[in-house]
Length: 105
Image (cartoon, rainbow, N blue to C red):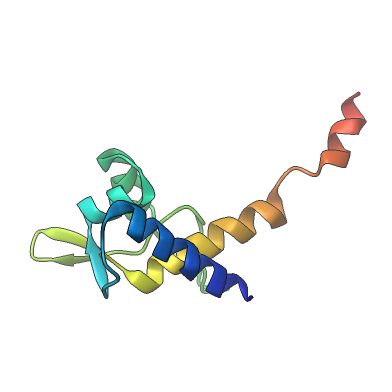
């Protein structure tokens, strides 16, 4: 399976666990339930979203792209899938290599 397909499968499981159905976008409360985060964390994630002009990727991989509909922030389903993909691959690319810990032993 491709990384995006795995992220989509994971998100579908998270939606089932939260008792929500798959739809085009979710309110801030629904995203908080899906990701199990607080309102403050959601605010930091959405306010910290900024695209890098060179790569087209978010500068902070833990941020979420959102849009305002009336007075409510909403997050697209596709953005949630991209968020899960970014964070899964970010840990693998930039995580601590266990061999590095041997340098300090």
